[in-house]
Image 1 (cartoon, helix red, strand yellow):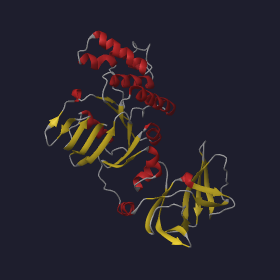
Image 2 (tube, rainbow, N blue to C red):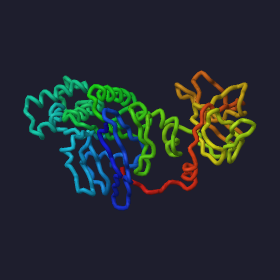
Image 3 (tube, rainbow, N blue to C red):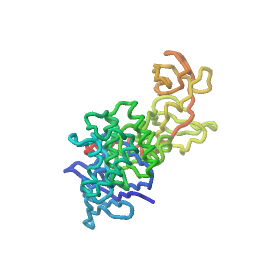
Image 4 (tube, rainbow, N blue to C red):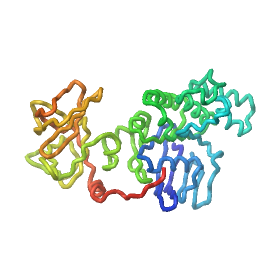
Length: 368
């Protein structure tokens, strides 16, 4: 069952297109992460689902209820949509203590005082803020303030929780800790979440399903591993992790499938490479390039080495081609050393990506 369904949603700000014919279905009880660069329409989508923006076309369903339809002139007010939202800047009332901040939406709903106390106490335990009820926002750390904002969104028991880059203002260690907390809270409550970010590590760590957006459109949607290992377009291959993108022609020679590069040597492709002979754009992740001192493979020269702690990234020159390769920290080669390289896995991106690469994308600048 789906918690939310977006059908052909379009939103413009003057001549700027923020969302264009956007379609999405969100599975019940899962975390859907939307990933994309600034300006691709992520925040506009969340605000449209919450009822804070009125789209120009399309429909929005929450469970089986239509909460927005331009054609049918339906637009359910935000407070009746049972949607919670957590903002990037926390948006806590500075003059209210944490207990009153969390209780505020319940008081607006005019719930009984005893029920408000029960719900606030329960939710503060869930987000691990018990004992801090009487503190004010400025007396809390950034992580505690974000927990308070999350508690305020959850206390209404929404059927859908929207999170707009909620961890972007925190340091790296705290972001990692709160990612785990969000996953724990989602497991314990079973709530459906749509989480927006431009941080790839955050997206991969949180997502049950990962959607990649570009220019107001959903480019690819699937499990994080699938999106990473089988990017559907050049944009996805570039945006999710690092990739070597090689343009050439796939050929069969003596039982071996090769990628004859536009500039450079013929690159032997791994067994099982699924692409017919002809022009191709191929993505190769740095960790899928195997380096050895004694072969087999193509002769290469180490141009540079960068120590990353848990890995070493090498720049290799093969003929007139430069490749990025990544190995474990114990596999050490020196700059200038001659080595052999072999491709363990390669992903064909297809003719559509070749056309996109040559023409370039449309250059509008949508608002987020």
